[in-house]
Image (cartoon, rainbow, N blue to C red):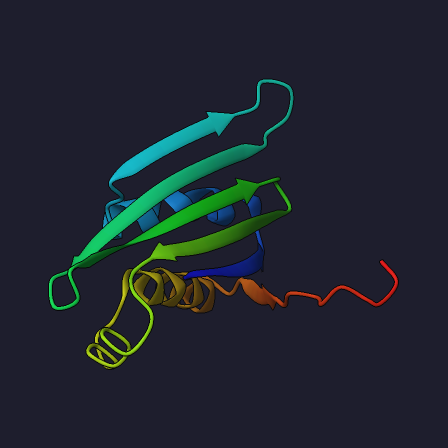
Length: 129
């Protein structure tokens, strides 16, 4: 099971620069890597969140990649792991997962600070390519 969600966030550079740090303060990742370009003001943050679901005896990993370019921030959330199928498909339908919490933070932060948040849709490959 692997799902990818992508979000673009537009707004003032100072507010966009604060956003990843506030996310990591609120929801602490298991692993965190930060990169700042010496040539430009670009920043890349990679955070790995892991949560263990005891009922289905499986762990779910969320990799969060945040690219800040000064004009926008791009969030790419990739969820892997877990179980699919009859055994674990409907045990925790109401339970909030780590990706739900991160997405809620992105949307809430954008709303509170007047940022524009857009979800990127995956485009299906066209015939002939």
